[in-house]
Length: 116
Image (tube, rainbow, N blue to C red; front, side):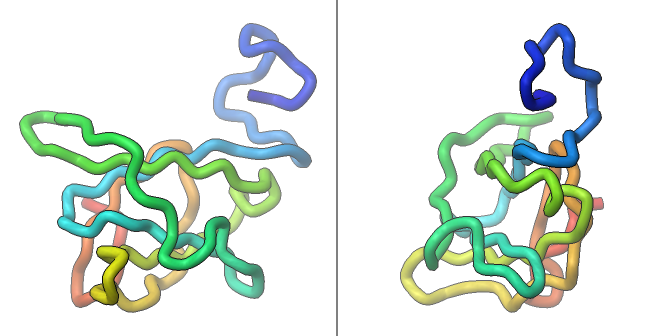
């Protein structure tokens, strides 16, 4: 939602230059925690990251869902992602991935990537 406007007044898909943006991340992998950051900045949550908040069945596949609230300025850039189980097993740092309002991710080559 554009800061200072009601949902009806906000332009759909337009991210304000200040304020925050909401990103929904979905993953069907076994990991339970998601750590996200922008290069040169701290992560959005403390390590080991946010635990998934819910599961959703999408086309017969169960996905874990995380909802991130990030600075709008960061939304325009790329995030880095690590999935982990909260007990020491984790992926490597991802390559930079462009943020989107809804993202489906998976693991390939030991790193988080966008699901194709």
